[in-house]
Amino acid sequence: MVRHRPPSKGNQHSNRGSTSPSSERRVGLARALSKLGICSRSQASKWIAAGRVRLSGAISRNPEAPVRLGTDRIEIDDQPAAARNKIYLVLNKDRGVVTTASDEQGRATVYNSLPASFSGPEARWIAPVGRLDKASEGLLLMTNDSEWAARITAPQTHLDKIYHVQIAAIVDDKLLHALRRGVENRGEFLQAKKVSSVRTGEKNSWIEIVLDEGKNRQIRRMLESFGIEVLRLIRVSIGSLALGDLKPGATRTLTSQEKASLDRLMAKHSGAP
Image (cartoon, rainbow, N blue to C red; front, top):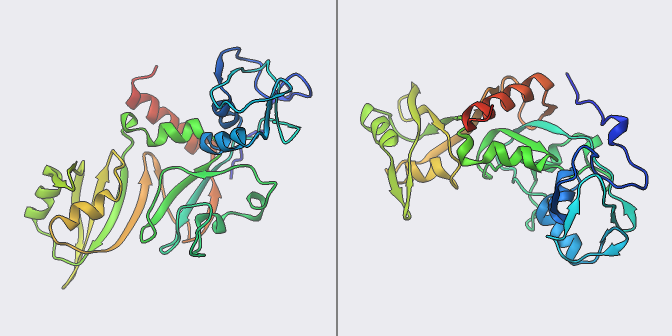
């Protein structure tokens, strides 16, 4: 398993600041903390509002305060905000687990599946890339690289996500065509990029659905429009990354080759050189 290299010595700072010296462009304070891999932008905004963040020695309560990356000093709770190693994890989410950091009802969360090295108060801030609802299973990426996560989930990236769905109905060509054609549900147009039959039993069927957008509970809502119950919903791939034989509830590190493949695919779809 390939792990990402730690930052080079040129990226480590003592009292000059906490960001890479390779760039002098200005970004908002909350975004700067997110780019460092310390926390999400929304969490950074909360810390800033609470007066926990200093910019060049002074408390700043403005999440949009301009920061010169590589020059300005940022501190959290009077400690230098050092850049974190980027972490990229692959999780096979179990059914019944919620995709949140904490749950008011005490239900298990995806964070309970993280290795011990990524848990506890000293852990690097890691967040799910997109969501799978409580009843859904399968491939879920987690990372502290918020900008990379945003590219993965951005509609313009058009990364194919493949789901295997068990339904309480016998699939036929009419249903497959209707899912490809799309349907209105609660004022929103929902459409599958591709749909095919996997196998059919006496009372239920498995179908494969490919999406290149991520609308809330899209597959369940599409099938709900036809009065069809979803029995199981498993995400089996994101772009070039397949779930493979990773056991339910298990987590592994995304290899550098897998990340590079996803990056190339995103660049191709976005039209970047």
